Image (cartoon, rainbow, N blue to C red; front, side, top):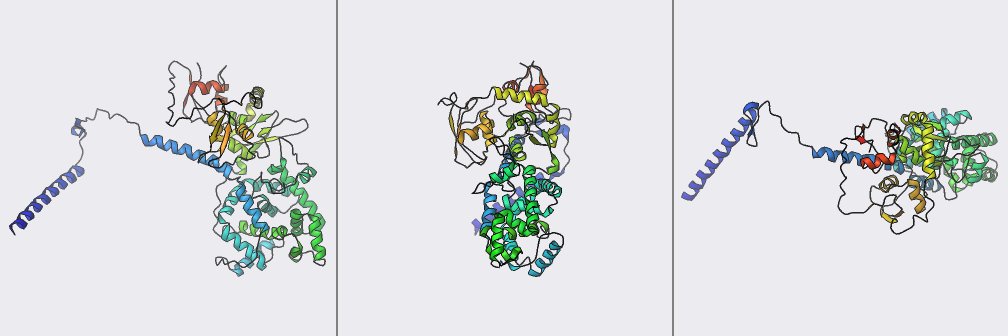
Length: 517
């Protein structure tokens, strides 16, 4: 009993001490701070003294994160052109089934009413039938994310399609055909060799004056291939007088459509001859109509299109007067190579040739058009000098001292690897026989670096550049290494890289560059 009394007394005393300390803390927090007699780390701070500024390490980490985000944006441009989406749509069309799909969010009565509204404003026969209902509900249920990506890309491509279709009096809704044909992938290539947004075979492309050579494949050119598609569709409509049959003939050829008409007993309505068409064509028009419905009523179904890399209005074209590569254009304008590849998909080797009697154009972001057109002569001279000194195909490069084998890591893409080793994307693709920009984690690449990089486990420390006593230049918006080099006599892009320890072409606004020895 005595022990309990003593223990109780000790606990009470301890609690009083804690309460007293808490009171002191609260008072110190609530009482006003006097600068003149405040003490920090044992030193008195007066109103005249200055607290030294310390660098915020978090800010540097944040900048690194932003740089990575920019790289991811660039990689996303490549992702937009992955074969996966094109292959999945191709497979969907060729393997369509028409069993009822449970999708309670869209009732049959609502669908009938919307299809009637769509039928009233388009020349296609958009009439309700259970097969079309099955396809629409399957797309809504299984392809929402891919359709949102395509809705985002459509903001870039559809204005080009509509302009060309209007020139040839083609229904503007025909733009949705490019989604069924290629998933809006200019470099899409089918198993039988059909290529581009509108999937032209080699001979058909030649028939409609699409240039296909070692340098160029205009089947991948958004405008010229659309012109050819409009001409071909106009001929098919003249033949059949029905846009549904014109679509079927576009896919499988007039011969197969004519056979289906004979086998059906002479019917000329697509839905009546569909059982006699090839399997892929039988799913072709339903896929087109289902795509049209979803795009026209996307808002009602809660679709949120992804932001496209460019709006069409944000770009413009310039006629190219001399041979030049996308790498050269990237260096002089500061536009990322991945963006140039996205905007100019018809140049197979990423080189715009100069051929007598041919006209080729370059599509650029509007912000860069002025830089290019105001400096054309200098840019072409720079490109010619670069072409003149480029390496010959590989005898001098192939030696074990310079050849490296690079293993692709997560977050890598061709532009990033090329900048690291001071080479061009087109060179890496040629050395490794790559036909696209797609890479797989763990893939091995052969690279012949301009300046061999020594791989170290420890993080390399960039040497500090001392600008004392040297002429400097502060980077402004729109500047590139090439444009800065043009401002100073006798200074080259490589000089700027060497003097400022820069490995790539990226510049940050506000950074100070040494521009003299």
